[in-house]
Amino acid sequence: MSRAEAFSDGIFAIAATLLVLDLGVPRPDPTLLDGFLHEWPAYAAYATSFLTIGIIWVNHHAVLERLERVDRGLLFLNVVFLLFVALIPFPTKVVAHYLQSGGDYAHVAAAAYGVAMILMGIAFSVLNYYASARGLIKAQRRLGFWTQVRYSIGLLMYVVGTGLSFVDARIALIIYAGMALYYVVEPLTASEPSAH
Image 1 (cartoon, rainbow, N blue to C red):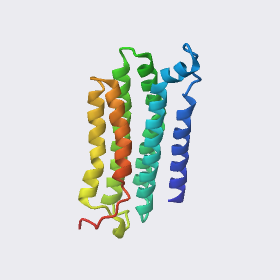
Image 2: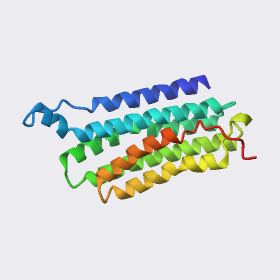
Image 3: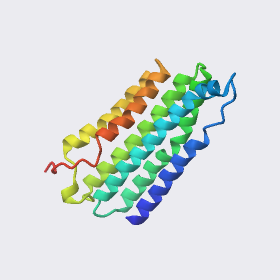
Image 4: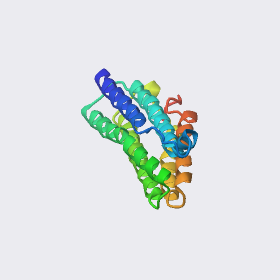
């Protein structure tokens, strides 16, 4: 289990670090302050994605901490989940670029970001449910049914944000940022008696 955790931590660290590499030096437009203000989409996308990756890391750590053992299936599901975590810097860069340029494709970029988050959320949910269904979680650390339902609300909100991105990309970004805050308030680490 420690090897799975170390590998996962490495992927999270790389994904979070890659985000900052996309922050460019602003051009004086006409002043440096204006250049910084013009770059707001890049800063907003960076902050949203960094916080999201950090919160995902905390909740992923909580899942691993609850495990009594791991099996081959769980390891493969973890790899698939990490595939989507490592993907996050790419849609972050795309949405920042198209929001900044103000072009016609900002809504598609925001939708692509949302789809990446949906895929990551599905992979995380499958990982968690698999661990529960296979009896890999310590009996005293199992989450109750309603905790799992409340936690899954975030996945639904990513779907809503993706749909609203076609109305206004900025609204979608606000929803995505709100989801980061939601997962701080509704942590997977909440303890609740087992449903059975």
